[in-house]
Amino acid sequence: MTHLPFIAASYVLAALLFGGFGLGAWRRVAVARRRLAAIDPRRDRGER
Amino acid sequence: MSARPIGAGERAAVPPAGASLHRFANPGRFLRISEAVLPWLVVPAILLTVSGLSWGLFFAPADWQQGDAVRIMYVHVPSAWLASSGYFGLALCSLLSLVWRHPLADLAAVEIGPVGAGFTALCLATGSLWGKPMWGAWWVWDARLTSVLVLLFLYLGHIVLVRAFDDPVRGYRAGAILALVGVINLPIIKFSVDWWNTLHQPASITVLGAPSMAPAMLWPLLVSALGFTFAFAAIVVARLRAAVMERRIRGLLMARAVSR
Image 1: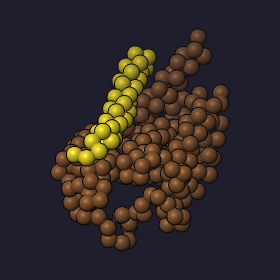
Image 2: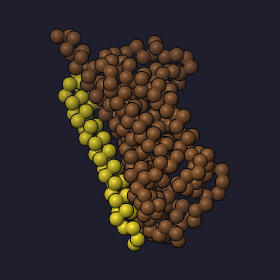
Image 3: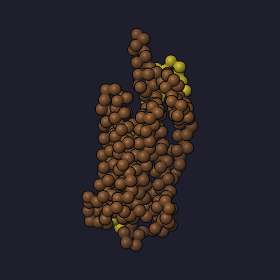
Image 4: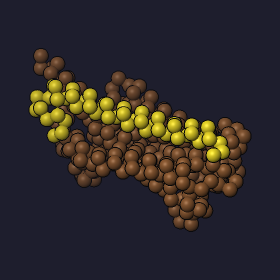
């Protein structure tokens, strides 16, 4: 495969972007849900 | 806006023209709907992106002129489309925020910003990685490249501006105005390759005309683009869910502090 380092770098960057944003969003939701469950008097876990 | 208890007084502030929009503005309803929708975004995002990129990387033919470097297209082009359409979404949310004071539009604009900036940065980086072997340069001050760089600066400016004020509402307003002014850059990006002599090639796929690309390359590109679109939507919806919950947490903590 010609130009392999350039191609590999492109796909690695895409994987890092998706992984970073995906994991970041998932972690943020999990933390917010946990904190909300702890303090919300309605104990609705953010779903109402 | 953040100090107001969630849902309080929202009905009274709804202008008739935006009433239908505000049906979906209740944060509790948004959390319920988005929880149901999110798996339907995440699963297609993973399946389509992985299959589109694998198809492009391993099974699509090499270009007769560019060789295998054309495989960068399956990352570069979808990220470029999402960079522009993400900014359009940001501007739309800004319009909803400024005109109808939609309570979720501000948060949506704030959450789209970093994701759009990420996709724009990916577009520029992969463009450089494609440009070096094909043009012999990592970067040229070509109209297309420069206008996409301006798009990245608009995203970054929006990210900074919405966080620059003590009063978040003022930040949202300033960010919304910047986002709407920046919309002028979208047609410049789109038509830059037609209006000026650019090193960047013209569009291979247009809305009206037939694509000037072999189907063996076109299909993996479309699958990849669809996967990127689902991924962008899934990330934004997940971030927006977190933002809504964080706002409710701030409201509850503030109410608790006031009652003491």
